[in-house]
Structures are given as C-alpha cells and as structure tokens.
Image (cartoon, rainbow, N blue to C red; front, side, top):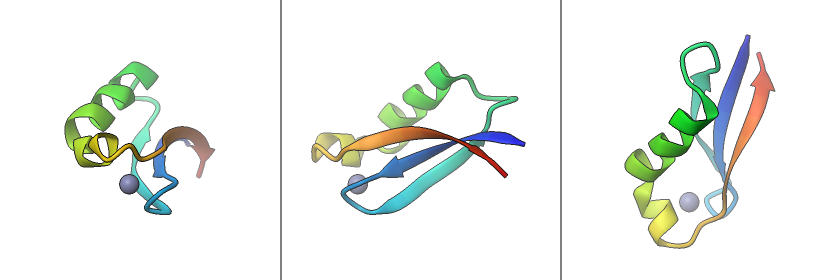
Length: 53
Ligand SMILES: [Zn+2]
C-alpha cells in the first residue's frame, strides 16, 4: 500500500501517514499548512515521503 509520510527533520519525527489512494500530494500539502502550521511557522523543514507499507 502506497502512502505519503509527512516528516519533520527538526522534530525528527513523522507527523502522519496518508494513504495515497485517498490523498493527493496537493491535499497532503494542504494538511501540512492546516494541521502542522506550528512547524511551518517555526521554520521547520518538512518533507513528504512516498512509502510502501
Ligand atoms: Zn517540527
């Protein structure tokens, strides 16, 4: 199953996984802005990785 993983380098942790079937990359980027705004605000480096589980 393919998923997107939102990972914060500064916090060294995964912020969430979203099934690619239901979430487009654009949607995941919106989730980062809305749900993980505190990381963005503090200038943390957040990446979206594609993972297979
Ligand atoms: Zn962070």
